[in-house]
Image 1 (spheres, rainbow, N blue to C red):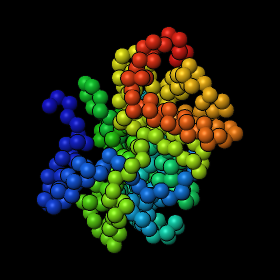
Image 2 (image 1 turned 120 degrees about the vertical axis):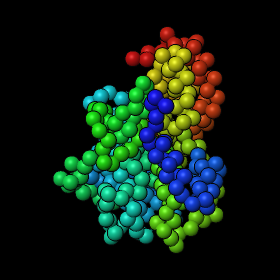
Image 3 (image 1 turned 60 degrees about the horizontal axis):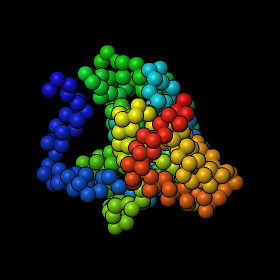
Image 4 (image 1 turned 45 degrees about the horizontal axis):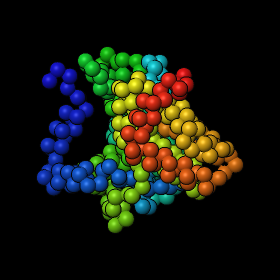
Length: 326
């Protein structure tokens, strides 16, 4: 193979070294639950993460693991609009049974999963819960950390800010935005491989059942917002097809342009008081003042649109030159 995927090859090799029962459990998870499996909601927040934030995440009810933001609001030196503005995090194996710092023991030599680049939605949806901020130590600032970027004609190692690295870093992650089910799947994989990490905390019946919520779209009546995860595979597939066919880049900002024009023509009432907050990998909608009736209608309209992507393609085909994409 001329351009092998180093990460996939290593994962496959590790899988083959596992015992048959663990392999069976992993196979069952990825076949039946991985696409909809999710972390526990701790508490939703509208506060953006900052470099140095220590947070909790919960793969089991009543059990929490620690994480830390190593770089918030990433500013790319090598432009990448999907990575720009997102956050690099690491997840540790130290755990606690309440929302406290009592057992915070960061060990960068034995992380729970590889470093990840995540959108702010992990905090907005309550999957990450910030406890405090501890400024990065000199050791943390000097960590040999990077990402493996899949690229044609040759994959390569790079920093989170995009610059190529001449060798493999000690701490390696896969370059790209982690979807809103991505952390949960990666964490559960490790908990299946090493069940001692959650000893005494088996999955409940509720947790075993796949979530019926949309992974790409959330309607939060309590906080009065709708959020679209642009990096979700369902949404990303639409963006890729549109880009290939019409040369239109549907990141969060592109979706704002498209939806503003689409709703102006098809459902102008949805724009009355609508506020749109786009980022590279997500876009949030809310009304000022709050209007739950319109918010619910917007959610249903957007859900139908994403589930019927031919509507999007046909609209762009017929209106491409009328939309101000700049």
